[in-house]
Length: 427
Image: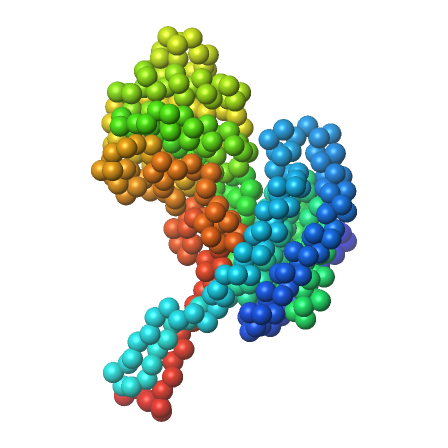
């Protein structure tokens, strides 16, 4: 083991130990004090926009030189919209009820003592993420409000931006009288830091990875700590036979093109065969106008060729590919049941939508598709903690245990049982 590796191991152990100590204080900190720290952070971000953009420019320049795609550059850019969303999310989180101490269930035992189930923090949460620097702020404030300490490990491509944002988080905690170690950013790009963190199950209670499938599978395979996973965002839109074509065209274009580099963007379009010859050319033209590359099955290819619209033959791997770019696969099906089966086979249990005017078909879809979020005539782009009224999100879970879908304050809590009696003993 090298000296550098020993130093990194010691560093990560100290960060985790400090986080554990801070979490015990934070778990019992007043809501007013936690909200004050979040408001202070928003103020500090507003006061430091220029310096934050300067640090972000360093990351963008390095990423560009390394040949990163335009879609990924957009994820990395600390844009005015991203600033606006961070600030709005922070302020919305302060307005949400504090989940801690909320009574979930009560039970009166036959022997006369009471049992109360209440929300408590998880403890120390490690968040591993790539590209988007706003995650540093979103995760810090959600963990803070829910009484959890956070250990943040951002991607090397956003290193300078993340360091700058993390310093503001520390400053906000200090100025609000909360433990500054309640949110810490791991200040190294060395991968051994992640390997060390994943083994510290005596100090860290939960790991949440946010990023590509490679990162998430690595974390899931190597972590000694429970992991809440979000694999691919392979989102599907199904255009049913009872279709408002004008509405469908707008929704498909929005779901694919509004921001193609995010996990809730549509990757597959499925169309009922009875409306495909009319609906597909109109939708395809709108997509081509936005620069979308179409990958079509044999039936869709024939329809597009007859309409003189260019496409590429889809292969089986295309149905299960998260493009994160202006690419969309198209499948023609003969029934609603076939569409549901296709989504349950190839989707990633993230976000899927039916476009239809038929309520019965919509209900069958909403109940039959096994995904965290299912939509009826709404763009999949709304799968987001802010849009769901959570203020922000720490991630979107495609798991079924503990949390599913956008994870806000309540999803960052566990629970405990409080038992109060008058001297009862078991006989």
